[in-house]
Amino acid sequence: MSISGTVRTRWRGLLVLAAAGAALLGFCVARQLDRVAPSLASGTWLPRPRAIADFALIGANGRTYSRADLARAPTLVYFGFTHCPDVCPTTLAKLAQVHRLAALATLRVLFVSIDPGRDTPEAVGRYAHAFDPSFEGVTGRPEEIRAVARSFAVAVNRVELPGGDYTMDHSAVIFLVDPRGIVAIFTPPFEVPALAADLRRAVPYLAPPQERRPT
Image (cartoon, rainbow, N blue to C red; front, top):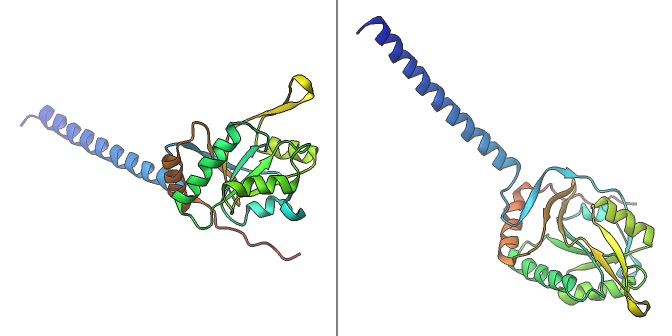
């Protein structure tokens, strides 16, 4: 074999090795990314958890609900109001199905009212419990509701209706929260089997719950 032929053969060998190395590196990077973030079919896992500002809302029986409560278990958070004619009850009904289908013992659902003028803590609690006895409902002062909505980047707008009545426009988003903050976002349309599967898929990537500190 000539010198030029030997050089070409060596270059071909080096190219094959380089291609194999690149493929192996790509596989390793893909595996590493898979460990960092689950692949969700119906939502988006955030590249970095979004921190939630502390808040003080009121649940049934007058219990204060704060950011520390969200750190005690993985929680699905949904903003709405009890006088909502369609989107809110439909979404909560689907969340009740997801809760049963996912069968995750520690998963909680929190319904945050954006209509403190009409939604008392007792009314919000009854409303949430009507869909699933484990669901929690909270409300609070208007300024607290606005602050929490900003923290979750939820758009809220009061719309005046004829006759002096009003309704509320808001973002129809479901947030998955763990002790680090918001880790995933789910947007309509919500499909129960896909959302339940995504939640099961997300479990290994959630931060462990934090115990409530004694006061």
